[in-house]
Image 1 (cartoon, rainbow, N blue to C red):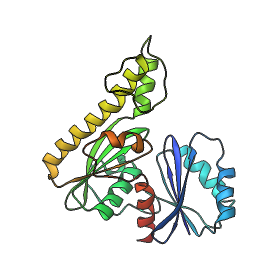
Image 2 (tube, rainbow, N blue to C red; image 1 turned 120 degrees about the horizontal axis):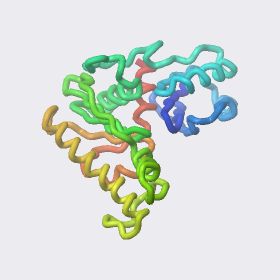
Image 3 (tube, rainbow, N blue to C red; image 1 turned 180 degrees about the vertical axis):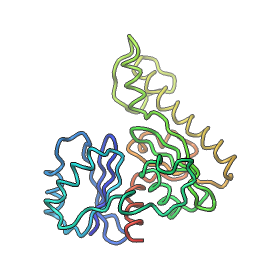
Length: 243
């Protein structure tokens, strides 16, 4: 059984795979001091043969590698170090691309065909563009939904700190719902507009795949999204491992 681990800035997502099948998934906060108690529960219930890790948080990767030594009799496989994502990377400086973005691009191309746009609604929002020839062309990086709400509260005198949620109405009639409407409908409109502009460059047939921690909330407001796949990164890690 393979344990795929995606270390993000907010959460660490874990997926248990047997061959191509995702058996179960878990999320734990990245900010925890130790992950050992959570991983002990998983290892006690399952026979883990290998671990593969994709990370955008180097400090958490170091902690996790040390703790996994106590549970696994081999080193975990690190994407970008032990395995290179098998996709042609056309970024001007290829090493600047987050490994999670390359994993998403590879998984999207394998599962949904190309040309393709992958939009990841995580701590940051990323657009990743894959050509019809399955090349990683580049993309865009924007502040995430929760970051945007936090900035409104910290950089203004009167706007409150609120939790991300569904807006009750399109035209907000109180401060909270005005903020939620602006963030949710605003980023949905932004997504649709950018997707259309990208399609004009890479082909109208390009599909838009939505993923990331906030995709279940924002996805229903985006007209351009062809498919929501919350587990795209984990599936990509499994595909790369099996390859």
